[in-house]
Length: 77
Image (cartoon, rainbow, N blue to C red):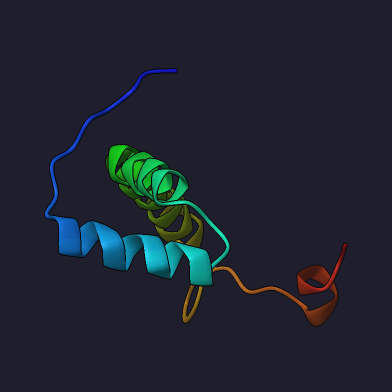
């Protein structure tokens, strides 16, 4: 695991430590999770775009004038 050094003013760090104590976490754990979310943001957007593309493709031919389903087909497990 790598170490990261940041520079922040004393007052901000003090407030962050107090907030972390209230939330029963560490500033380090919070920053590590925030950095993971930041690093994975594009990946999440790509996955969402794929889901939306698949949803759009599955809708082709459905609706008025297209494929229709019976209630039984829709509720089959």
